[in-house]
Length: 93
Image 1 (cartoon, rainbow, N blue to C red):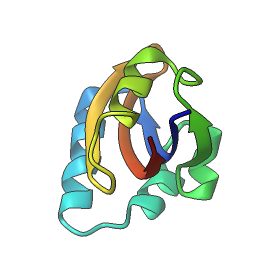
Image 2 (cartoon, rainbow, N blue to C red):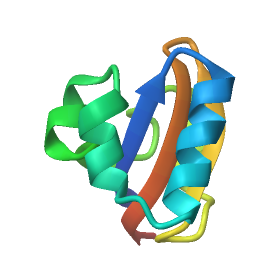
Image 3 (cartoon, rainbow, N blue to C red):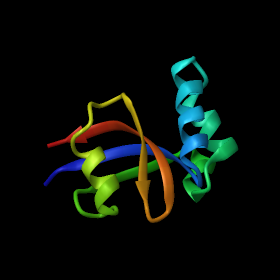
């Protein structure tokens, strides 16, 4: 079974999501931005969602987590919850 561990930042606008991605690319810490901006309860843990299997997250999120390179910030990814920046921190295929 495929398993992954990921962290994310959830915001309500694509513009804010893109700005946060720019901040991360400029060296701002992902976890700090998650704590400050994420609308998901996981923000308190720096955006960490823990480990989960394929199919446990909404399809758009799942697709990114199980295909993106580990350690590379992806997004904005739009789901029914809003806009996410996603970073896969580990994956076992």
